[in-house]
Amino acid sequence: MLLGLTGCHHDKQTQAGSSEVARVAEACISRDAFETQLNLRARTAGDHFSTESAKAALLDEMIRREAVFAKAKAAGFDQRPDVQESVKRLIVDKFQEEQMKARGADEPFVSEREIEDYYRQHNDKFATAARVRGGILFLKISPLVDAEKREQLMVKAEALLAQAATAAPREFAALVQANSEDQATRYKAGDIGWVSREAKGRDLEPAVMEALFALKTPGDFAAVTSGEKGVYIVKLTDSQPAGTRPLTEVKESIAYTLRKQKLDQREQDFFAGMKAGLDIRINRPLLESIQPSPSPVKTPPGTPGMAAQLK
Image (cartoon, rainbow, N blue to C red; front, side, top):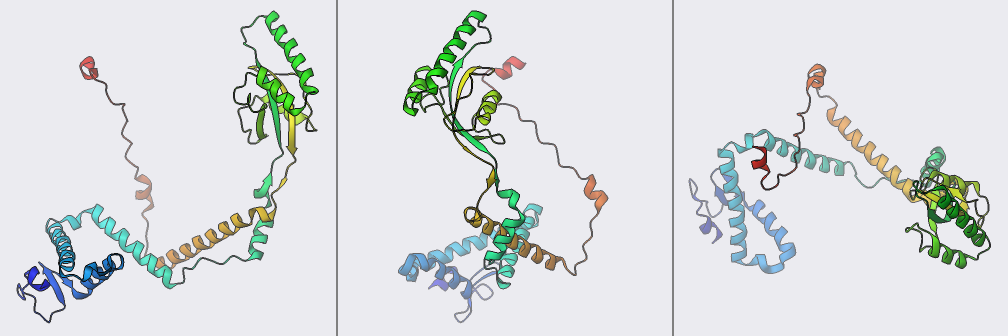
């Protein structure tokens, strides 16, 4: 029935005992090719593709594809450089995939000894900088304010520092909420989170950073600290010295790095093997003379009436 639907002939008709299910111009749709597609569809569609109508529809889909391919070749589409490059890339990728599988492309094994050696040899990668955590109460002082007003704000800051120094944590939080002008920390008891000199975290003024790192004991306050934006009451809430992250904490990331290195090396060995024995020559002067085309200048989209204005 399917053979009849395709209208194939020996010079234009396919024989009943032939292995061709259909022919489109010079292209043959073989029994093997058709069965492969049929089995792929049947994996997800179950018994649906056992019906004659489903098989006919699948064959028609394959005939349409061959028909388009035949017309594309007749138009010389397969000779276009971009199409040839796409085909070449497809062949290369598929060949590489199968070759790597044939050579044993299982995920590389990484031993405990390798992980420990890497940790020891790259100890600097796992170093942690000293960091501190603190709370601030900020009073903004405009650079345009007169000396008298500035003095009043400084007196207020000193009074707030005196209150803060004897306040319990909950009382300090209330003091910050009632007086601080730093909206990011005002409702978080002034908490700025963990900061280090290398990665500051929030956008803290240098004077605040210096005041924090000068404090030694959690709970201590610095003297009223002046910055470019105003004055700060600075409290140290916690600190951590510089150190090294333990192996147990970084073990998985090291194993991942080592597996990737082995996979990269496997790929490099593959390409080296592919290039071996081939006469490869590079025209260096020509290579160095070739430059990419300049990127087109992007102009913003015009607005209604702009063209008329430019005339």
